[in-house]
Image (cartoon, rainbow, N blue to C red; front, top):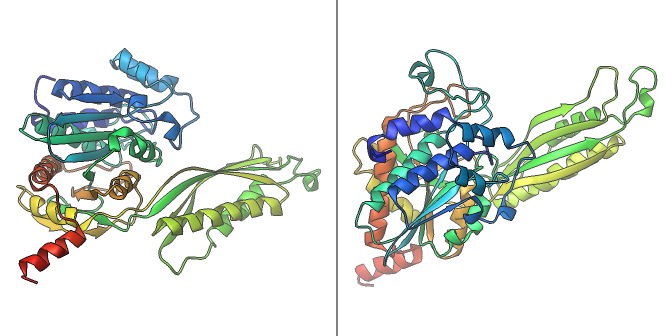
Length: 442
């Protein structure tokens, strides 16, 4: 690790890619990040419960975390760091405090997905020897790239004459919407003037940058359990209360929830399980679902309708439904002032050939918690996309990135941070109008 991060972007990304860990299980990942951050040298480093209040976490898993901790230990994770993450309190925040100047936040996510990575020899991670070593899990959304960007940017700013405060959030549990809220509520989000969040790809090609997303969908994850009464399916089916039948009704009716005239809404039942045998009336059924909306209010409309639909379907079949909203995230749009600045900087980065000032997102992201927090406190936020050629879509077994985008992301982010330092305070919309009127002599 004596070699600078900027000289090993590819190898570092591939190292993260080999060891994906899903939400609230990012033990080795966090330990590796801490090791790299300490080598860079920062003014403050907080891990797990020192980075946020564990009580603010969402979508916390009930699974046994022991095997994940032991796997991290076997792969050399620092024991003291593992101890800090007891209970699945993963993730870290690194702070550079370098005197007078703006307070700038950078958010990158660190979790993997429960996806089995392809073994096809034409899949580059297989061909070049960095396929996931943890069966059933994969970095199928580019978070390995995001972590690499976070470390490289932190190093570049640490070695510069930057004046101000840089806070890098290495956020866990993005894929379940569980980690953004605690990071946003933490003291490290206090008094930030600017926040940059970033994602790789999202169907934008290598050499293209989106300066800020618009219309991210507010989202909630919902778990539901339907409890009925078992019975013999042949001898006495009338004595049962069929949880599976209730679940089927709930699924059909959920997709029949009316769309809303105020904007886009979405609902999906992504996982459903029930029953024990063909001759037993199922007494228990479980579902994992989600609802989304173009605004936070529309998402909450869909959330209420989804909960009512599930409970009504259960009651219709003589069952009971328990519905739990395990996580949610609001809508937050990028600020045009930051979009304009990012556009200007990214346009001058070598290898970036096309800059889009804005693009509709169409998906959901819990970085919106941090964006909303900064905006409510009077700051500016944007969510950038750094394009990459990927052979298949995100969240697929053959997802991969064009590693040329690693340098593009670092240069665009570092350039933006330094320009924010020099231009601070960046005029906001109403202030910009005043400036334009003054320049016009009005």
